[in-house]
Image (cartoon, rainbow, N blue to C red):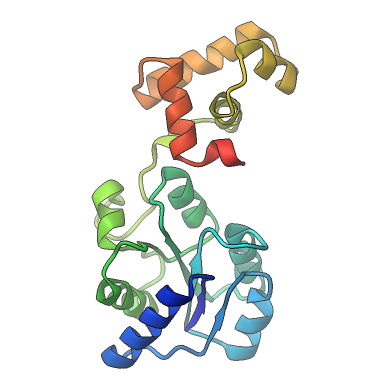
Length: 212
């Protein structure tokens, strides 16, 4: 496998766990996803493990490029944050799994082995990820996400709410009327089961939308 993560202590811990476990061999490490495609083509790993938040190229974008160049390549994400938006992005770009950095190292290694051996269509999650967002039917199928219920336009409005923009500022940003923005907000409140604009703002911040 290839491990793509800029946290050296975690990478060293995983490599030590690989050696102890004996089922996984680390072919190489990268501290950013910039050279991921080239490294995968050169090393031909069974599985690639990518940190979600690294300097350089966006991990989801590079994973999508990797899948286009190597359609059979299996890869999974690792993150300090278990966010609905990250889980949805991981599934959409073709990932085979998602693990939290708070998961035990042996759980992560076991999950990577499962990915390497599993059938097509399986989405493997670490214990802390499963606690927050269980997939439909056990491991198979996409993880359920509250953000999946929103349209692309609603996600954009939610992102701008998270940035602290007023309804009139959002309307100007999206070239829509304030009444239209109010409609998007009302539908989001119902879909997400929250009661106020302040709660929408907190959700957007928690899910990292305000950082986009």
